[in-house]
Image 1 (cartoon, rainbow, N blue to C red):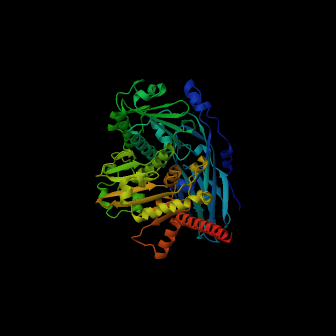
Image 2: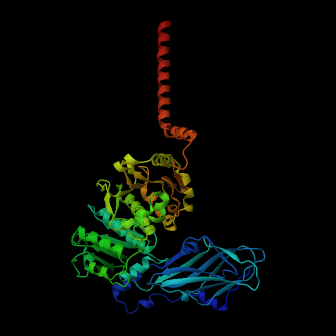
Image 3: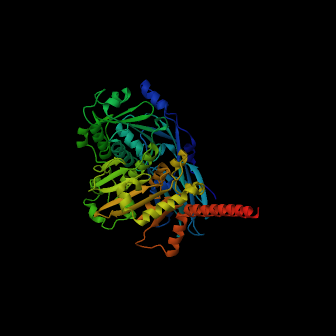
Length: 556
């Protein structure tokens, strides 16, 4: 393969001056915050940037493809590289491929008609904060077929150097929505309270809607890219109170921001009810154009966050299944969750973060946060006149799930239980579905079960659960489902997800055969059978022992 790069492309190999020059004139605290931000080098596939398309064609009928991506407002691009993987659509393919950024000068390659993987520098000066466009164009003087670009193997690698710290709520929102150098690991710091699930659920949805993907939620502030403190005024640290508009106490629901090297978002109020109202503001309104604080009064003029779902969407799910839920969040997302109860069956922080990941993905699919849903934990009593969504391990301990669970759910749970012993194999397959951030985090793709069914006592009420076997990690299961293509594979009345994919169960479509039922019964009762065989063998041993003693006694 012959690659020809325009002579001016040599400039793309140079690294621009350090962002420290841009920091001149800043105050000491701001400069220190900039110094605390590391240089970020990140590589993303074109498929990820393009919304998941694994390939695209360049031909005389489609002469160019545009890949849109966003960069945060506080960095400069110092290096940019593109690895372009493609194969000719025919043996007679000819012509040139031109690559440019934001309409800048193109880099041209003249490949031979065979599979190629070209790696070359892009002009770093063409990149800018905010929206960017990578254009890949094809020209030819012949009517020959063009090229098929492998968007999954083609990757753009950027080195981004901070020139300023994130300083406002508006900048934070732009950074969260960026495709590169975005705060992806987010620490949620809350205190145990009656509203903890509500507070974290609303904030998690607001963060996901801003990011366009599910972040990595954690309780460890030391390893986080963004720290979110959710509490009433009395429980805030001094530096968090100082960030409030009054400088000490809020006068109502308030969202504030400060940055001491790591961005901090403060969601608070004079009491828990006001803190909950602030969390609801976080999930409902955009921060675009706002400085370091956001009050309830600002919601009147702020832009709506997300995309409003169709009105009366609840009328569209008369025969809902997991596919309906995975595609739209219905029936639970209707009217921003106003007829839905969300219950977490989690006992540990890690499992709760897995449940938050699942709920955040549901909000992304819905297009907006479930602002008016009821939220609670396993100890709370969900309203009986609401649809019910239970998220977390061991959800069959919730009476509504246990009493109404269809046979598919119980079969799926048994299948998940049997799969627990095969985790070594599943770790090997995890890369097929795990997000890059998950791999870096060292997490595994867990085993989970989803099911959607009607309340047997009230056919107008829907019940669903996303769960895992009791001793399995729901953090791994929930995160792998929420941050991968596994979500879009959910279907049927029940399904098991794992690193190997999604297995759907729906006996209304395909009933299990007698052989399959017998095999499942045998597998489910393997331990019982082993115990019975062991008991029988032990009894035979005792019978033989006493029989031998009787024989010896008779002979003597």
